Image 1 (tube, rainbow, N blue to C red):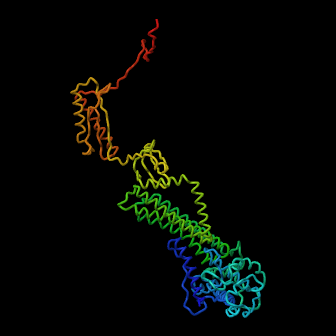
Image 2: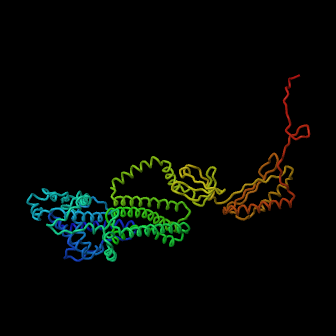
Length: 591
């Protein structure tokens, strides 16, 4: 036989583990809501509720609620961190089918539902215990299949047999009963408490909505006037509003401060200083923890319950998910920069850019998983999320074809590696230095200082001249001498130029300078000069070329060799005014 105590313990463990897992994932180890251990076996506080029949479920529920109520009367508050208090509270929750409640506020809503059901039971006439089916009567009636549900007479409260899940074959207050318990209580709360039957817990709901969860607050609240202690505004006890506003303001200010410091510090930080760069990750981690700490304070210390609690819990988890998104991107970025800091990887190469792109894709995958899991935790079915993602993805794909083309262009650039950050390239009419290679586009700083953003798809389909990867700078010059220059002077000029260029600064032995008398032009004799400068530092090359030009100039002056001057042909008219000659064709056959 399956022991109901083991079933309940297993269910409690799974529920607590699930809640703890999500919160740990979101805040990276900030276990604020871990379940406290229970006391040793042997007393009521550690016994699992008996839910093997409608009678056992109803008895267990009423006894556990009354036990909680007695603690409240004696201590003026319920300590959620006390193992004894939590164990008794779990006995109450053991009797409810809360499978349809959203995970983010399952325990909180279940607690309010349990209090409402107890208040209803304290106002309606209950049948005698022997009139409620137990295990023997169920088996006498033909087994569990013959009695799948039992309704308390003259009420809308049903105890039903669970057919699947961790609570299979247990009799619990049905999901429908749980869903309408609060509204049902509102309709019967004006009725008087019954005078016969099981023990009642008068004012249980009023205490639940008004009491604190801290002994020091309990002493303070106990001395407040009744209108402030039990009076409610917008569903919340009046004395809780100042504390709630204070906690909210403190949380908002804290998150704003953490993100402001994070953005300010990282914007001006050198990312190669990895230790300090990793230390800045503390700010997004703290920002993730703030909303969870806020909920820990308002629920477990102040004692916010009901609709205000569910709204705050939903918003806090939603904000935590958003903060988790920032944390995932920040963490993955730091991992990528740590890998790029390896001596084997150039921080400006395409390998570094590829690592950054892959890191962003991993971050997107992690964010997607977090949003899906968080959406399910907030009560949004995974199927709905996936369907929405599929429809949204299709619409996005149709509406962003150019973006997808740019992404494929990025992949092509990463594979071919035609340039890297810091290199000068020439692409059509653009000539500049690569400043950034992104997922969609590349930024090019032109030589005139202008910044051009080019789609990666266009770059992948274009012919790119990579000036930054040239091994040397080649110069080709034509030195022209007048046509009346003697042959001996031409030979002296060639020898002088070769002497100037011999063993010049920046010469690569594999590429010696070349000087030749190459052509007879209509207006001059042409001497072609070719030399290579290594390494390809443009400013050093210009300085060296200036020295070469001046040295050739001095040599020609010493030898009396003149440079050819450009020939100017002027057409003049008969008069003194200079203008093109007017030419007229005459017919030779004309008389």
